Image 1 (spheres, rainbow, N blue to C red):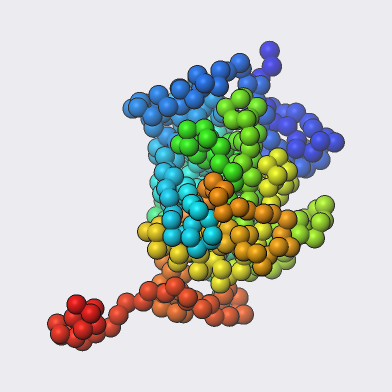
Image 2: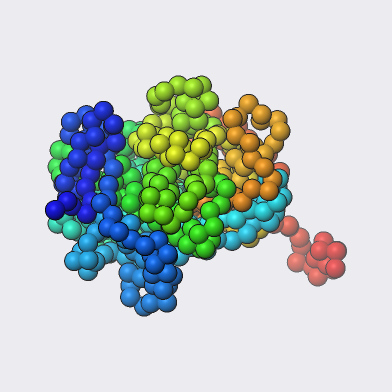
Length: 447
Ligand code: F0G
């Protein structure tokens, strides 16, 4: 009997198939990335949609999770469900952002805010699955390299599962909210004198020499959990496929996952068209955009990535081939925006009452750029009437320093690397100063 799911090397010249219960993340033959591939049983798409909806009314913990609710698309069998490590993640609403829509030049814009997850970022969607698999494999320790959010999420889920968590972070380049979470959840935090890409390389070496379970998105199980972002979104939209989904790009695991979800949803007949995926990178850390813009076939890493959106300060994204596949599947594109554009877009989202961390604001900045006639060189045309969903990935309070600096007019580009360049705080809203005198206060407030 064929297994319900297995690993397959993504390299079509290799295509090696392997047992999904092996503690591996790359093909032993050609060292390319691995996919989890399903032998899906015959499933009626309408029944499946009805099941997903019915589970929303259930108090069963797996039904209350916006990841496990979609378990037909996850690499576990019934007997594994009691191992699930869940905080009831997901369930993040889709909301309108009218001021941001006007700012970018769209008739309307929806955002799905994944920062409203248990640890404040989208990583929880993948981590519940990754840590559950770690528990299934019986490992005692899990590890990751991170720009901050993966580490906070892994630390929390590892604590929940009683596993030792080890995180590698680039010293001085992780927003404080994220570092604070990681320490609180009891993970061993190793600060590397180097950037994320160096930390990633080290943790890969550590895990292959020790068997410690690696929980970066290079791990196919992480990608499977992350997929449910797209499934949940389509469910929330009552399966009306939007024209475009815009998301930030860093290590590119999220882009890989959303493309895979859309592929499988179409394969099983839950949708019959695919929204265009539009990945936005920070220009100082945009190797995928550079590759596409220059028509190259292979990605050239940025040796020294730069951006104050520290979550996506990554020069050598491990999942770029899978992300490229997502773009090919969806007729999508990857663009890049500068620091000023990111900072302003974040402030505009704030005007809609929607806070997010800088990396998430690349989505709105990217939309504005693509809708502006001045950027005609990009091979993407967005029409103002398109139905667009922007995926916001991290909570505003992950990096409050960035927000405060913007509003106080003190934000500088990548100041940690010494090459400071001030950002113009076009939409700042600093506090007013006034003497403790009611008349002066009334005059100031024009009341
Ligand atoms: N947005 C936020 C808030 C992130 O933390 C990340 C990645 C991304 C977007 C990009 O997602 O890597 O899948 O392309 N953060 C990772 C981390 C790298 O370590 O927390 P991606």
